[in-house]
Length: 437
Image (cartoon, rainbow, N blue to C red; front, side, top):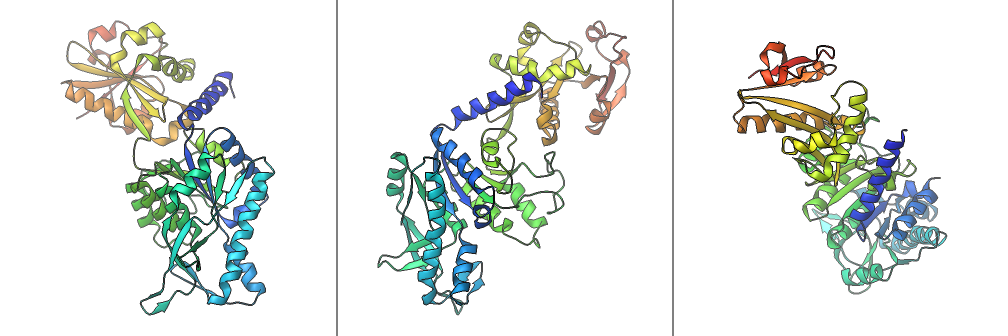
C-alpha cells in the first residue's frame, strides 16, 4: 500500500470519528458470534468504540444457550412464526439462560475496563392466542424505559438487554433479541443499528443478486436502499435463514428514523470498526438516503480530486492538471461524495460551437465497483442537455471500451471544436468518442 493510500485511510478514520462523535450505536450479537473464537476481539473493538466517545447499546442473542438449558431439563419447545413456544415451567430456565449470556458479555467488557449494566428496561405483553394457536411464554415488546436507558448511557455505561421482558405485574416473557434490537434502535433514535451474525453475508453465490446491484471485490453487496431491499427480497423469496427477517427489520428501523442499518459477518475479525470508519465498510448497509451523492465541486475538494486523479495521470489515462488549472475551471467539475469524503470526479467543458466535452473522469479504485462512474457521466449528460449542448464528446487513450458501454461511439479528431484540437497532442493519440442521440 502506498503512503498516499495509507494517508487516505487515516483521513477516513479521522473524518468518521468526527462524524460519529457521541453517536449512538445499537449492536445485536447473535449467539454464534458470542460463542465463537472471535468474540473477545469483537468485544475489544466495542470497548474501543465506547472509549472513543461513541455510545453503545448491546443486545445479545441467547437462542443456543436457551436450547442447551431446556434440553438439559428435558423441556420441549417448538417454533411458530419465528417465536419460541414453551410451557410456563420453561420460563425460569429461559430467563436464567438469557441473563447468563448477558453476564458473559458484561464480564468480557469488564476485562476491557468497560462498565456495563444489565437491566430490565423492557415492558412486554404475552402474544397470547392468535388464530387458535397459544404462543405460551412468547412475548411482544410493549414499551421501553427510554429515559432510564438514556440515563445509563449518559453516565458512561453500556446497557445490555437480555431477551426478556416483563409485564406490569412482573411476569416475564421471552422476546426476540433481533426484534428487540430493532425496537431499541427505533426508540432511542440510534445513528446506527448493527446485526452481527456469524457467517452471514449478503454475497453472490449464497443469494441471487439482482441485475444492476454493485458488488464489492469479495462479492458482497456493500449497500442497499429500501427499494433495493424489496427487490433483493423478491429475488430471494425462497432463501433460508434469518437474513430475510433481518432485512425487513432493517427497513422498518430506517423508516422509523434510524439513519443506517448494517449487517455484519461475526466470523470476520475487525468487521465492526471497518464498517464504521471506512466508506466502503465490510458488510452490507441498508439506508434511506444521503449515503452517496453527486454534487458540484468546491474549492476545498481540490486536494482530494488531485489525489484521485494522480494514479490515472501516472498510468497515462488522464492529462496532468495543476491545482491552479482545476481551480480556474471549478464550476465545470462535479464530485461523488460518500459520508463527507470525495471519491470520484468528472468535468463538463462547453465550447463556443455548442459542443460539450466530458473530461477528467476519475474514480478512486477502491470504489470503482460501486457504479459511481456511470452516475457521474449520467449527471454530466443531464447538465449538457440543460445547457443546450448540441453534442457531447470525450477524449480517451485507454478507456474506450468503458465509454462504448455507456453509449459513446468513435468519431474523428476533425469533429471536435477547433479550440480543443489546438491542444490535442498526436503523440498522446487520444481518440474521440461521441454520444449518439
